[in-house]
Image 1 (cartoon, one colour):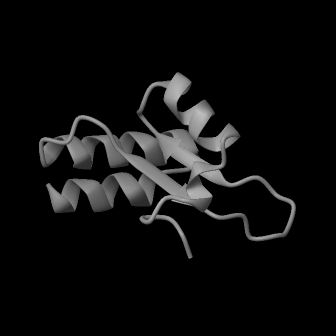
Image 2 (spheres, rainbow, N blue to C red):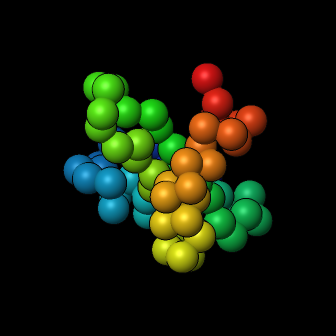
Length: 75
């Protein structure tokens, strides 16, 4: 499973490919959903969220700025 994940990552060319690789790896551990969040590199830019959670959830998460409260993503 790990080798397949690494191969998928190295073949990734965009966020959609990365999301597919991460979804596959998460499913391998019996996790049906995943979320990968990064803070913007420049002030004023939007954070990036790659996820297979429903868009209604991810939209609300970003709109409500839950990432600023989430103990997993807080920095």
